[in-house]
Image (cartoon, rainbow, N blue to C red; front, top):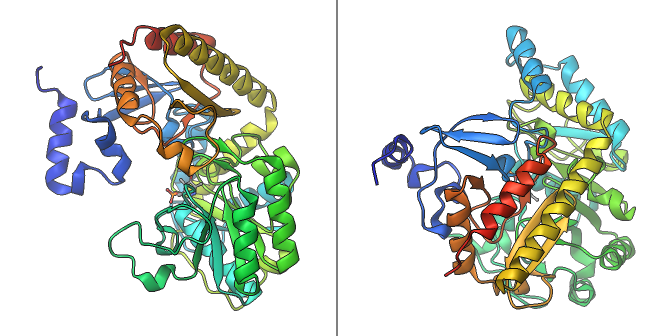
Length: 428
Ligand SMILES: *Cc1c(COP(=O)(O)O)cnc(C)c1O
């Protein structure tokens, strides 16, 4: 094969950036191909440096729900950047976004802007500790909350698994207060509360998990989790960095009517620019510096261009509730088609979908409900599928354990092309 421009750039990048990337999954290691280097995006289509086009089912890992370079978002960024790039001072546009989120999303009286999802979750956890005066945090195996030390605990399995660092460079001391429970398994949570209840500051969960592939939490499980948190005086933190403004405008919390104490956002809320935020009940948020004792700060937090892009995105989503109907329609068409084709081909799959988030799990299991199930999937088969789809111009996540995302710029024809490509796959 001729050396392409994409490959040349990627090879050069490896000389200057570890693995040639700034975030590991982009290196496509799990699927044994070189990643195309991207140049341009328009609606549902992205183009690499060799002008090959792809129908994009990654959407920058979620943020691009309006499609690439949506005209209103581009306009907002352009207009703001003519006058304001950064001040490190209060601005009106940050008020607009904060007010908009507090007024349109439930259980968020006040909000603090940060620069990434990682920052949002680590700060929310600190706030939960500062508010409750307790130390321990429960997280669920297979949930990802960013690369903060305290959360980089290898899933391990089973109730009460002692935390083991999942990354080099994480001292045992920084995870000794992280307890791991099993997703969708209320007994695992009860057991931990029974043993550590007095010292649990909070429980953090992706209410629709997207980082072990898509695995929605069951309603009864979430209700019971909420009740337990209440009983023990621990805060329930919904990490809606991925699900917020995606599975519904009001996020996963609105699907089941559960009231978390704190919620974290990022991805969609920045319209594709680096952002994050955490919010919740006023009495909790008022523990934050400068009015409270919990210190958290950021030079770039609430950056005007980011706020303008986020506001344009959220306002457009809020003003167009029919977008969510469209996403559901496209999602269910994709889900049905994938299941049909898998059946024709005699491949066993479980398709987990929550609205515009979906994962095709290659597995002989009947369902994927937690990390243990997800880990048993056939990642080799996924790699073969991925390589074929990429070749056909269908860009999906380069890992079995990630979600694929739809945007409002996807149309029936894009779903048809996905299915057509899948149909022509000759699995190994
Ligand atoms: C992406 C993600 C994060 C981390 O966000 P970054 O902006 O990459 O730091 C945290 N939690 C969830 C649920 C995510 O999907």
